[in-house]
Image (cartoon, rainbow, N blue to C red; front, side):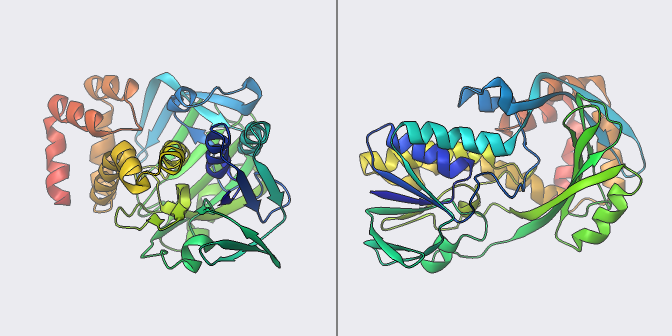
Length: 355
């Protein structure tokens, strides 16, 4: 028996991969409804469709353009040859649960993980035998804490609102600079009337958030949470305890996106458990270099001031720059960085600034 704590999309996808390969799987979720509370924009790249067959009703919208806004108000629009996907996160998580259940995985909702002694897992006041324990329970992972593998963790604090207003349906917007220090702000439309607007920062997110959403429209609801900052030195495997997804900080440091890295890591964890191999070696071979590159780029951006962002976004308005970004694979950025440096050697000054 393998026990997974957390019935988000990563935990559910792991359960599916294990169960379809004949493993006994139990998934523990403290909330009564999977997918709630919402703590995500639901925006992901087209790469997701190469991992899983997405049902039409799981895709709320597709973004054909990204609008980048500089601190000085300069706007650069970039068309996307491969539109990005806006998911119904609640239904996406539930669809993965249904897939796992069809393969035989068992789900215990409204139940809380308490501890693990290496053989038995405590759930509420009950004890269950288990051969392995997986923490897919988010950035503050209780599995990591109770098994002494929490490590040194840093986070951005994110705040988001669903806002009724007037939006360009196929265009998502990102604002850089002092509006959201150390990260960025975003607007992801669901349709012409509803959008998910938010930002993340290491500072006082509420003050920045209030300024961002002022006069944007009617706030229908609010969400918030922590976005993990990738740490390659974090322990994700200890004896028969494993961490995956946000619990393992497997998140792109440039965008905060964790759905695709987490799902790819879940595939590697399933293979490692089934074949009795090293999970850490498998996931680092699969996505480690990519996550390292995202982190290097983030560290560079952390040293930017508003003037630097103004210059960078001005460069992005050049046709040579735009053509590369239009076709870019933003999941694995190494190739993108090299192409940009060849076409735009002026970018070297930004790299030099960050060193």
